[in-house]
Length: 85
Image (cartoon, rainbow, N blue to C red):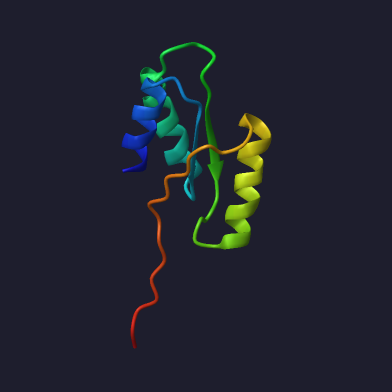
């Protein structure tokens, strides 16, 4: 879902930061999504982080904001589950 939202935002001219644990998959997604950019100055940034860990997520969010400015929209489709015993 996140990649589809990123594609739509890029098609509307937005800068996008992709965040997930697997850096290689993020880089591959960024490369694929670059086809959706509508102008050369648009940026697609990748930040490797475990978004289920708040401190880790907060650090990654600050990194993203330092590169592209304040976050105007956050789409989160991650979660954490604790199985019942």
